[in-house]
Length: 389
Image 1 (cartoon, rainbow, N blue to C red):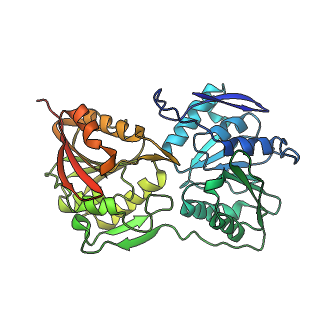
Image 2: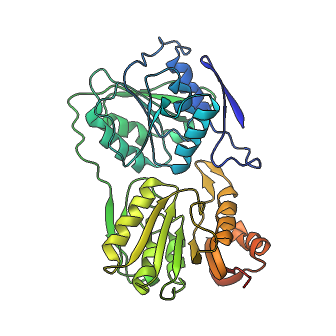
Protein backbone atom coordinates (compact mmCIF):
# COMPACT_ATOMS: atom_id res chain seq x y z
CA UNK A 1 0.00 0.00 0.00
CA UNK A 2 1.24 3.51 -0.69
CA UNK A 3 -0.05 6.97 0.13
CA UNK A 4 -0.92 9.69 -2.36
CA UNK A 5 -0.95 13.14 -0.74
CA UNK A 6 -3.09 15.81 -2.38
CA UNK A 7 -4.51 19.20 -1.38
CA UNK A 8 -7.80 17.32 -0.84
CA UNK A 9 -6.24 14.87 1.60
CA UNK A 10 -4.07 11.76 1.71
CA UNK A 11 -5.21 8.46 0.21
CA UNK A 12 -3.88 4.96 0.83
CA UNK A 13 -4.06 3.18 -2.51
CA UNK A 14 -3.25 -0.30 -3.78
CA UNK A 15 -3.27 -2.18 -7.04
CA UNK A 16 -5.52 -5.20 -7.52
CA UNK A 17 -5.12 -7.95 -6.59
CA UNK A 18 -3.22 -6.69 -3.57
CA UNK A 19 0.07 -8.53 -3.24
CA UNK A 20 2.50 -7.77 -0.37
CA UNK A 21 5.39 -8.82 -2.65
CA UNK A 22 4.42 -6.25 -5.29
CA UNK A 23 6.13 -2.93 -4.55
CA UNK A 24 4.69 -1.13 -7.58
CA UNK A 25 2.68 1.98 -6.73
CA UNK A 26 -1.02 2.39 -7.50
CA UNK A 27 -0.44 5.93 -8.77
CA UNK A 28 2.20 7.83 -10.71
CA UNK A 29 3.72 11.29 -10.93
CA UNK A 30 1.36 11.87 -13.88
CA UNK A 31 -1.68 11.28 -11.65
CA UNK A 32 -0.29 13.61 -8.97
CA UNK A 33 0.49 16.32 -11.55
CA UNK A 34 -3.06 16.24 -12.92
CA UNK A 35 -4.59 16.41 -9.45
CA UNK A 36 -2.44 19.42 -8.56
CA UNK A 37 -3.59 21.13 -11.77
CA UNK A 38 -7.25 20.41 -11.00
CA UNK A 39 -6.83 21.86 -7.50
CA UNK A 40 -5.24 25.05 -8.82
CA UNK A 41 -1.73 24.32 -7.56
CA UNK A 42 0.05 24.68 -10.91
CA UNK A 43 -0.58 28.36 -11.63
CA UNK A 44 -4.02 28.11 -13.22
CA UNK A 45 -7.33 28.49 -11.31
CA UNK A 46 -8.89 25.37 -9.83
CA UNK A 47 -11.17 23.60 -12.26
CA UNK A 48 -14.94 23.62 -11.86
CA UNK A 49 -15.84 19.99 -11.21
CA UNK A 50 -19.58 20.49 -10.67
CA UNK A 51 -20.53 19.16 -14.11
CA UNK A 52 -20.05 15.69 -15.59
CA UNK A 53 -16.44 14.62 -15.09
CA UNK A 54 -15.21 11.61 -17.10
CA UNK A 55 -11.91 9.91 -16.26
CA UNK A 56 -10.49 7.71 -19.02
CA UNK A 57 -7.68 5.20 -18.48
CA UNK A 58 -7.38 5.61 -14.69
CA UNK A 59 -4.97 2.73 -14.16
CA UNK A 60 -5.65 1.79 -10.54
CA UNK A 61 -8.39 4.22 -9.58
CA UNK A 62 -6.23 6.92 -7.99
CA UNK A 63 -7.82 9.77 -9.96
CA UNK A 64 -11.36 8.47 -9.53
CA UNK A 65 -10.91 7.86 -5.80
CA UNK A 66 -9.64 11.38 -5.12
CA UNK A 67 -12.24 13.03 -7.34
CA UNK A 68 -15.12 10.97 -5.93
CA UNK A 69 -15.19 13.19 -2.85
CA UNK A 70 -14.81 16.46 -4.75
CA UNK A 71 -16.70 16.07 -8.05
CA UNK A 72 -20.31 15.18 -8.81
CA UNK A 73 -20.08 11.40 -9.21
CA UNK A 74 -17.11 11.14 -11.60
CA UNK A 75 -17.45 8.61 -14.41
CA UNK A 76 -14.51 6.25 -14.81
CA UNK A 77 -14.06 4.59 -18.22
CA UNK A 78 -11.53 1.75 -18.22
CA UNK A 79 -10.42 -1.13 -20.43
CA UNK A 80 -9.19 -3.08 -17.39
CA UNK A 81 -11.12 -5.37 -15.04
CA UNK A 82 -8.26 -5.17 -12.53
CA UNK A 83 -8.26 -1.36 -12.62
CA UNK A 84 -12.01 -1.37 -12.03
CA UNK A 85 -11.65 -3.72 -9.05
CA UNK A 86 -8.79 -1.63 -7.68
CA UNK A 87 -10.99 1.45 -7.91
CA UNK A 88 -13.77 -0.25 -5.94
CA UNK A 89 -11.29 -1.29 -3.25
CA UNK A 90 -9.65 2.14 -3.08
CA UNK A 91 -13.02 3.90 -2.84
CA UNK A 92 -13.96 1.68 0.08
CA UNK A 93 -10.58 2.22 1.73
CA UNK A 94 -11.15 5.99 1.49
CA UNK A 95 -14.51 5.62 3.24
CA UNK A 96 -16.51 6.43 0.11
CA UNK A 97 -19.73 4.73 -0.92
CA UNK A 98 -19.68 2.39 -3.96
CA UNK A 99 -21.91 4.84 -5.84
CA UNK A 100 -19.55 7.77 -5.22
CA UNK A 101 -18.25 7.07 -8.73
CA UNK A 102 -19.81 5.51 -11.80
CA UNK A 103 -17.62 2.76 -13.22
CA UNK A 104 -17.90 2.00 -16.95
CA UNK A 105 -15.88 -0.13 -19.34
CA UNK A 106 -14.55 1.05 -22.69
CA UNK A 107 -17.34 -0.94 -24.32
CA UNK A 108 -20.16 0.72 -22.37
CA UNK A 109 -22.17 3.67 -23.66
CA UNK A 110 -20.37 6.84 -22.44
CA UNK A 111 -22.15 9.87 -20.93
CA UNK A 112 -24.12 11.92 -23.47
CA UNK A 113 -22.47 15.14 -22.28
CA UNK A 114 -19.04 15.59 -20.70
CA UNK A 115 -17.98 18.87 -19.09
CA UNK A 116 -14.50 17.80 -17.93
CA UNK A 117 -12.62 15.00 -19.71
CA UNK A 118 -9.50 13.69 -17.98
CA UNK A 119 -7.35 11.23 -19.91
CA UNK A 120 -4.58 9.11 -18.42
CA UNK A 121 -2.69 8.53 -21.68
CA UNK A 122 -2.57 4.77 -22.34
CA UNK A 123 0.34 2.79 -23.70
CA UNK A 124 -1.80 1.86 -26.71
CA UNK A 125 -2.28 4.68 -29.20
CA UNK A 126 -5.07 2.63 -30.79
CA UNK A 127 -6.98 2.56 -27.50
CA UNK A 128 -6.64 6.34 -27.17
CA UNK A 129 -7.85 6.75 -30.74
CA UNK A 130 -10.87 4.52 -30.17
CA UNK A 131 -11.86 6.28 -26.95
CA UNK A 132 -11.51 9.79 -28.37
CA UNK A 133 -13.69 8.74 -31.31
CA UNK A 134 -16.32 7.37 -28.92
CA UNK A 135 -16.23 10.37 -26.58
CA UNK A 136 -16.03 13.17 -29.17
CA UNK A 137 -19.84 13.45 -29.58
CA UNK A 138 -20.18 14.13 -25.84
CA UNK A 139 -17.77 17.09 -25.90
CA UNK A 140 -19.01 20.64 -26.31
CA UNK A 141 -17.36 24.01 -26.80
CA UNK A 142 -16.95 24.51 -23.05
CA UNK A 143 -15.59 21.05 -22.24
CA UNK A 144 -12.22 21.10 -20.50
CA UNK A 145 -9.98 18.31 -21.82
CA UNK A 146 -6.78 17.50 -19.93
CA UNK A 147 -4.55 14.50 -20.53
CA UNK A 148 -1.69 13.32 -18.37
CA UNK A 149 1.18 10.89 -18.75
CA UNK A 150 4.85 10.37 -18.16
CA UNK A 151 7.13 12.13 -20.63
CA UNK A 152 8.04 8.75 -22.15
CA UNK A 153 4.34 8.04 -22.82
CA UNK A 154 3.44 11.27 -24.63
CA UNK A 155 4.71 11.36 -28.19
CA UNK A 156 4.13 13.54 -31.23
CA UNK A 157 1.61 10.94 -32.42
CA UNK A 158 -0.28 11.32 -29.12
CA UNK A 159 -0.61 15.07 -29.55
CA UNK A 160 -1.57 14.68 -33.21
CA UNK A 161 -4.38 12.36 -32.16
CA UNK A 162 -5.79 14.89 -29.66
CA UNK A 163 -5.41 17.61 -32.29
CA UNK A 164 -7.24 15.61 -34.97
CA UNK A 165 -10.06 14.21 -32.86
CA UNK A 166 -10.64 16.96 -30.27
CA UNK A 167 -9.10 20.27 -31.31
CA UNK A 168 -6.10 22.59 -30.79
CA UNK A 169 -3.63 20.93 -28.42
CA UNK A 170 -0.63 22.00 -26.37
CA UNK A 171 1.45 20.53 -23.56
CA UNK A 172 2.66 21.71 -20.19
CA UNK A 173 6.17 21.87 -18.82
CA UNK A 174 7.42 18.58 -17.43
CA UNK A 175 7.17 17.96 -13.68
CA UNK A 176 8.82 14.89 -12.13
CA UNK A 177 9.06 13.39 -15.64
CA UNK A 178 5.30 13.86 -16.16
CA UNK A 179 3.47 16.16 -18.54
CA UNK A 180 -0.07 17.45 -19.09
CA UNK A 181 -1.90 17.73 -22.40
CA UNK A 182 -4.45 20.52 -22.94
CA UNK A 183 -6.90 20.15 -25.81
CA UNK A 184 -9.67 22.60 -26.72
CA UNK A 185 -12.75 21.04 -28.35
CA UNK A 186 -13.40 22.37 -31.83
CA UNK A 187 -17.12 22.16 -32.76
CA UNK A 188 -16.09 21.93 -36.42
CA UNK A 189 -14.34 18.59 -35.78
CA UNK A 190 -16.40 15.59 -36.91
CA UNK A 191 -14.19 12.56 -36.15
CA UNK A 192 -16.82 10.05 -37.25
CA UNK A 193 -16.96 6.42 -36.09
CA UNK A 194 -13.98 4.62 -34.62
CA UNK A 195 -11.97 2.49 -37.08
CA UNK A 196 -11.95 -0.30 -34.48
CA UNK A 197 -12.46 -3.24 -34.36
CA UNK A 198 -10.39 -4.51 -37.28
CA UNK A 199 -10.49 -7.93 -38.94
CA UNK A 200 -7.95 -10.06 -40.83
CA UNK A 201 -7.51 -13.69 -41.91
CA UNK A 202 -4.59 -15.84 -40.80
CA UNK A 203 -2.35 -17.22 -43.53
CA UNK A 204 -1.53 -20.88 -44.13
CA UNK A 205 1.67 -20.64 -42.07
CA UNK A 206 -0.28 -20.01 -38.83
CA UNK A 207 -0.43 -23.66 -37.80
CA UNK A 208 -3.72 -24.55 -36.10
CA UNK A 209 -4.91 -21.00 -36.74
CA UNK A 210 -4.58 -21.13 -40.53
CA UNK A 211 -7.58 -19.60 -42.24
CA UNK A 212 -9.17 -18.21 -39.08
CA UNK A 213 -10.81 -14.80 -39.15
CA UNK A 214 -9.39 -12.70 -36.31
CA UNK A 215 -11.22 -9.71 -34.80
CA UNK A 216 -9.27 -7.14 -32.78
CA UNK A 217 -10.70 -4.33 -30.69
CA UNK A 218 -8.46 -1.40 -29.85
CA UNK A 219 -6.01 -1.76 -27.00
CA UNK A 220 -5.23 -5.46 -27.10
CA UNK A 221 -1.69 -6.75 -27.55
CA UNK A 222 -0.58 -6.74 -31.21
CA UNK A 223 -4.02 -5.61 -32.38
CA UNK A 224 -2.88 -5.05 -35.96
CA UNK A 225 -1.24 -8.45 -36.54
CA UNK A 226 -0.67 -11.90 -35.05
CA UNK A 227 2.20 -11.67 -32.58
CA UNK A 228 5.12 -14.00 -33.18
CA UNK A 229 4.73 -15.82 -29.85
CA UNK A 230 1.12 -16.77 -30.57
CA UNK A 231 2.08 -17.77 -34.11
CA UNK A 232 4.71 -20.16 -32.70
CA UNK A 233 2.24 -21.52 -30.12
CA UNK A 234 -0.35 -22.22 -32.85
CA UNK A 235 2.17 -24.48 -34.60
CA UNK A 236 2.44 -26.65 -31.46
CA UNK A 237 -1.07 -26.35 -30.03
CA UNK A 238 -2.44 -29.47 -28.29
CA UNK A 239 -5.70 -30.99 -29.50
CA UNK A 240 -8.43 -31.19 -26.89
CA UNK A 241 -10.47 -34.34 -26.45
CA UNK A 242 -14.23 -34.32 -27.03
CA UNK A 243 -16.07 -32.96 -23.99
CA UNK A 244 -12.95 -31.38 -22.47
CA UNK A 245 -13.11 -28.05 -20.64
CA UNK A 246 -10.39 -25.80 -22.05
CA UNK A 247 -9.40 -22.37 -20.75
CA UNK A 248 -7.71 -19.78 -22.96
CA UNK A 249 -6.14 -17.77 -20.13
CA UNK A 250 -5.08 -14.23 -20.98
CA UNK A 251 -6.95 -14.87 -24.22
CA UNK A 252 -6.28 -11.61 -26.09
CA UNK A 253 -8.17 -11.92 -29.37
CA UNK A 254 -9.05 -15.53 -28.57
CA UNK A 255 -7.24 -17.13 -31.47
CA UNK A 256 -5.78 -19.99 -29.36
CA UNK A 257 -9.08 -21.08 -27.83
CA UNK A 258 -10.87 -20.61 -31.13
CA UNK A 259 -8.33 -22.83 -32.92
CA UNK A 260 -8.91 -25.53 -30.28
CA UNK A 261 -12.69 -25.27 -30.72
CA UNK A 262 -12.48 -25.45 -34.52
CA UNK A 263 -10.33 -28.60 -34.26
CA UNK A 264 -12.63 -30.18 -31.64
CA UNK A 265 -16.13 -28.60 -31.66
CA UNK A 266 -17.26 -30.81 -28.74
CA UNK A 267 -14.76 -29.14 -26.38
CA UNK A 268 -16.05 -26.32 -24.18
CA UNK A 269 -13.76 -23.28 -24.15
CA UNK A 270 -13.64 -20.53 -21.52
CA UNK A 271 -11.92 -17.34 -22.65
CA UNK A 272 -10.52 -15.21 -19.81
CA UNK A 273 -8.73 -11.87 -19.86
CA UNK A 274 -8.52 -8.87 -17.56
CA UNK A 275 -8.96 -6.60 -20.60
CA UNK A 276 -12.55 -5.85 -21.57
CA UNK A 277 -11.56 -5.19 -25.22
CA UNK A 278 -9.70 -8.52 -25.28
CA UNK A 279 -12.76 -10.44 -24.11
CA UNK A 280 -14.88 -8.64 -26.72
CA UNK A 281 -12.28 -9.53 -29.37
CA UNK A 282 -12.21 -13.17 -28.28
CA UNK A 283 -15.98 -13.45 -28.48
CA UNK A 284 -16.06 -11.86 -31.94
CA UNK A 285 -13.23 -14.12 -33.17
CA UNK A 286 -14.98 -17.21 -31.80
CA UNK A 287 -18.34 -16.27 -33.35
CA UNK A 288 -16.66 -15.68 -36.71
CA UNK A 289 -15.09 -19.16 -36.84
CA UNK A 290 -16.64 -21.70 -34.47
CA UNK A 291 -19.05 -24.39 -35.53
CA UNK A 292 -22.73 -23.89 -34.82
CA UNK A 293 -23.46 -25.12 -31.31
CA UNK A 294 -19.83 -24.95 -30.14
CA UNK A 295 -19.64 -24.15 -26.44
CA UNK A 296 -17.83 -21.06 -25.16
CA UNK A 297 -17.88 -18.77 -22.14
CA UNK A 298 -16.31 -15.31 -22.01
CA UNK A 299 -15.01 -13.82 -18.75
CA UNK A 300 -13.44 -10.48 -17.91
CA UNK A 301 -11.74 -11.34 -14.65
CA UNK A 302 -8.72 -11.89 -12.46
CA UNK A 303 -6.92 -14.92 -13.93
CA UNK A 304 -8.79 -18.10 -12.89
CA UNK A 305 -10.38 -16.69 -9.74
CA UNK A 306 -13.90 -17.28 -11.09
CA UNK A 307 -13.25 -20.86 -12.30
CA UNK A 308 -14.22 -23.70 -9.90
CA UNK A 309 -11.27 -25.75 -8.63
CA UNK A 310 -10.68 -29.07 -10.35
CA UNK A 311 -12.98 -28.28 -13.27
CA UNK A 312 -10.56 -27.80 -16.19
CA UNK A 313 -8.77 -30.28 -18.46
CA UNK A 314 -6.48 -27.96 -20.40
CA UNK A 315 -5.22 -24.41 -19.84
CA UNK A 316 -3.52 -22.47 -22.65
CA UNK A 317 -1.53 -19.48 -21.46
CA UNK A 318 0.64 -16.75 -22.99
CA UNK A 319 1.21 -14.67 -19.83
CA UNK A 320 2.09 -10.98 -20.04
CA UNK A 321 5.22 -9.87 -18.24
CA UNK A 322 4.47 -6.14 -18.23
CA UNK A 323 1.99 -4.22 -16.10
CA UNK A 324 1.68 -0.95 -18.00
CA UNK A 325 5.31 0.23 -18.22
CA UNK A 326 6.63 -1.96 -15.39
CA UNK A 327 8.15 -5.41 -15.85
CA UNK A 328 6.76 -7.89 -13.33
CA UNK A 329 6.41 -11.64 -12.88
CA UNK A 330 3.40 -11.28 -10.56
CA UNK A 331 0.83 -11.88 -13.30
CA UNK A 332 2.48 -15.08 -14.50
CA UNK A 333 2.78 -16.38 -10.92
CA UNK A 334 -0.92 -15.75 -10.34
CA UNK A 335 -1.90 -17.39 -13.63
CA UNK A 336 0.22 -20.50 -13.00
CA UNK A 337 -1.04 -20.89 -9.43
CA UNK A 338 -4.63 -20.40 -10.56
CA UNK A 339 -4.18 -22.97 -13.33
CA UNK A 340 -2.93 -25.60 -10.90
CA UNK A 341 -5.96 -25.05 -8.69
CA UNK A 342 -8.43 -25.08 -11.61
CA UNK A 343 -7.07 -28.21 -13.32
CA UNK A 344 -8.36 -31.70 -12.66
CA UNK A 345 -5.78 -34.37 -11.72
CA UNK A 346 -4.03 -35.20 -14.98
CA UNK A 347 -5.02 -31.84 -16.46
CA UNK A 348 -2.40 -29.91 -18.39
CA UNK A 349 -1.13 -26.34 -18.49
CA UNK A 350 0.52 -25.31 -21.77
CA UNK A 351 2.52 -22.10 -21.61
CA UNK A 352 4.46 -20.09 -24.15
CA UNK A 353 6.98 -17.49 -23.08
CA UNK A 354 10.25 -15.83 -23.95
CA UNK A 355 13.09 -18.21 -23.17
CA UNK A 356 14.79 -15.75 -20.81
CA UNK A 357 11.80 -15.59 -18.45
CA UNK A 358 12.55 -19.04 -17.02
CA UNK A 359 8.94 -20.16 -16.67
CA UNK A 360 10.09 -23.80 -16.41
CA UNK A 361 11.51 -23.06 -12.95
CA UNK A 362 8.20 -21.66 -11.68
CA UNK A 363 6.23 -24.52 -13.21
CA UNK A 364 8.44 -27.22 -11.73
CA UNK A 365 8.10 -25.62 -8.32
CA UNK A 366 4.29 -25.56 -8.63
CA UNK A 367 3.57 -28.77 -10.53
CA UNK A 368 6.69 -30.81 -9.87
CA UNK A 369 7.23 -31.12 -13.60
CA UNK A 370 7.63 -29.06 -16.79
CA UNK A 371 8.32 -30.53 -20.22
CA UNK A 372 9.67 -28.55 -23.18
CA UNK A 373 7.29 -29.22 -26.07
CA UNK A 374 8.97 -26.94 -28.60
CA UNK A 375 11.48 -24.11 -28.71
CA UNK A 376 13.22 -21.70 -31.03
CA UNK A 377 15.85 -19.03 -30.33
CA UNK A 378 13.22 -16.70 -28.81
CA UNK A 379 10.30 -18.77 -27.44
CA UNK A 380 9.64 -21.98 -25.56
CA UNK A 381 6.40 -23.94 -25.25
CA UNK A 382 6.11 -25.76 -21.92
CA UNK A 383 3.71 -28.43 -20.66
CA UNK A 384 3.02 -29.06 -16.97
CA UNK A 385 0.71 -31.82 -15.72
CA UNK A 386 -1.21 -31.73 -12.45
CA UNK A 387 -0.60 -34.83 -10.37
CA UNK A 388 -3.04 -36.70 -8.15
CA UNK A 389 -5.82 -39.19 -8.71
